Image (cartoon, rainbow, N blue to C red):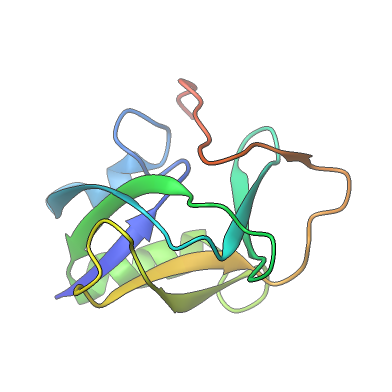
Length: 121
């Protein structure tokens, strides 16, 4: 089992949360201030910004290999996003991974520390 940090459509109540069905919710969390979050409308993108980042808010989940593989496909690994280790200020001792976009999404609005949509797909 692995632990992932999610900050967008995979969160509880949002459109892609079904990919986490049957997985273990561990709680809410915040990243170290090494990222920025951008609003793409239908989904967000977290991008590495080590010098001017913020603490992105999201959820942590313990997932099995099958679910992680499905989420990797959803996130477009390795073309659109990459999965990297992340430090959580709220859980510094956990080994956690998250999904970040390869490139800065030009024209997308910076959405601060969190992204939320009540939209179902």
